[in-house]
Length: 106
Image (tube, helix red, strand yellow):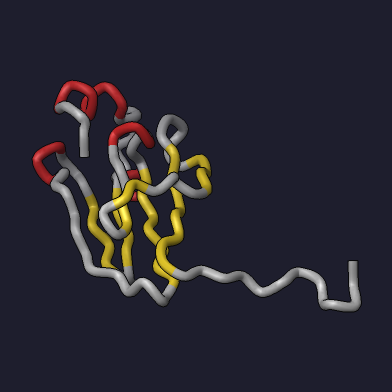
C-alpha cells in the first residue's frame, strides 16, 4: 500500500459503519482495515493455472498495487462502495469465461 496516514484520514467518508470498513478479500480470506495501522502489505501464493479473484474495497485505486508473478496488473472492474472510494474486482491467473453465444449463434 502507498497511502499516508493523513491521506487515510482524509479519504475515509464520515460513515461510522462496519459495512464500509476498507477490506481485502482473496481466496476466502477477508481482511478488514479499521485503522491506518491495520493497513499492511499482503502476499499470497496463487496458482497460475486457476482463476483467483482479488477484491479490494474502500481504498482509492492509486493507494495500492496488485501484482501477479512479480508483474503489476491492471485493476479490473470498479463499483461504488462508500460514496468516495470504490470496490474493485481483479481476476488473476488463468481465467476463461464461457462463450456468451453458442457456435451456431451470433
